[in-house]
Image 1 (tube, rainbow, N blue to C red):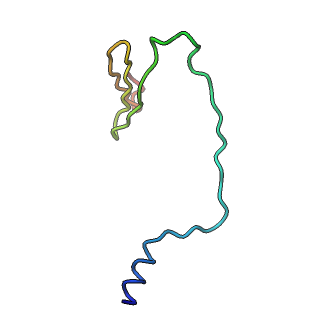
Image 2: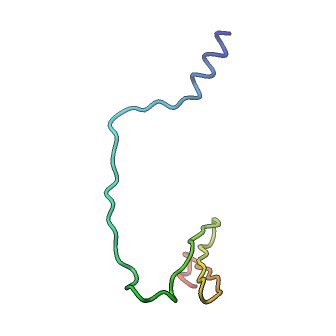
Image 3: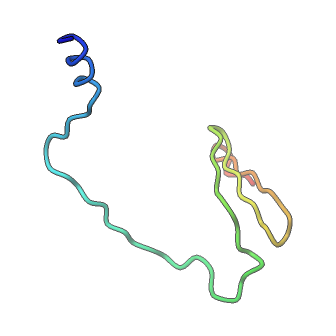
Length: 69
């Protein structure tokens, strides 16, 4: 029973040190009224980033290595 308690306790993460908070800063990417450019996503598959353009019925694939869409 003692070994089971020790193993269960080892699985719990311990928090040490101080907590850091993230500063949220937002930037306007599209002006109001540019709805045809609204996208959904992005999704990263480990190689590419995929972005959908809903109103244009398109899926775009961005390659960060070549900087190509």
